[in-house]
Image (cartoon, rainbow, N blue to C red; front, top):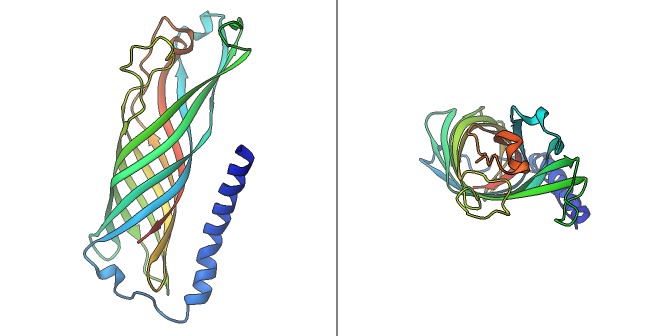
Length: 243
């Protein structure tokens, strides 16, 4: 299943990278949608995938215990789905937001244990997964170049505010060994380009996000939680927007 998913993702990337080149070669002779950028606002549907992980620090007593030898954060693949609203501010600057923006991801920690609880389902290498369904509200400023035939290049910077619908910090469940808070905020940056077709505008974008809030709701009585201090989210995503 993972092999098939990787093949689909690879095919998606190759198609997304080749589509602008093919499109420009086909559409260079005429200017498509010449009045598109003069509209007071634009709407779009955004679909993409992401690679995410946790950036974390060990608690200051980590080296003084012998139950957990090492902790690693594992990268995972997820999906993004959003509704774009773009408001031009000037010839080269736009304000963008996503009133509806969902991110589906699954992050994980890999623990190397000195004394695994075999009857409890642990092994020498034990993985604890954390699933996330995040509603995000980004506020972005986009700076774009002049239009070159049917293409325009841009960069973006902004902030975001996240609410994780699947976060478990408030659950009274002893089996939830890593508890995360629901709220996060961070900064993000991206590069991309607009490809103007006769009936729509296709926008491939590569974006990097850094979470700034400490997501960890630490429990000092649990070995999987007590050995971690701060947890911050990290994500890189590739998406296509159709306007």
